[in-house]
Image (cartoon, rainbow, N blue to C red):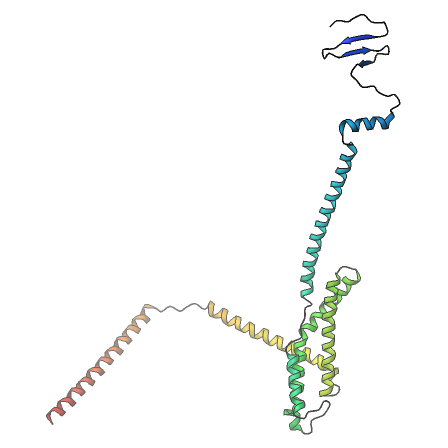
Length: 290
């Protein structure tokens, strides 16, 4: 590399790239092909120069990353909420099933019997005229049908009485959904209306009976329940005893005795058959002689 003589304030270097560099007195180097830099360009001018060179502002990369993060966050959050809502709906549907109550068929049966009795001349609130009518007349038939209806209502009545404290507590503490609460209220209203209706019907059959009919229905229900349980236990006990009883095996002596009896019986049958055949032969011989 040859260094030519130049004035003391400038030294020109010949580079391998065929570019000449000038070393300034302050130690900086300037290339001949380098575009001039404006000292008054400032920060904005520098950023514009960088943008012209690169084409994309780095801030756009940062902004794009933030937008992608926000989109991913909302997508994940919405999916999580959907899963939670689906789970809540599933468990809510399970809880509301226990309040999907229906009145027993005895309710419709009672109204059919009532319609027949009214067609036969019975009037609500009327009393039987004779003891015979009281024992077998429409008054007796109506009373039996209504008591049967009340007994059939006892299970749903007990169910609502059992669930009522817990549901009211959960609702007061905002620990149950609106769907569950509405299902409970609907079931409670159904049972409450049925209780009042049975009381009204009982007073039409026998004035004052409404004060006792539900207590009587509860007693009869318990009696029938105990009877059914006793019968079921008796059936289970009989089946268990039958399965547990070992099959009695016969001894060799008993088997020999049975064979002997069977042989004697067979011999007697043969003798009878022979005598029968001899009798037939004699009768046949007599007829031929004639």
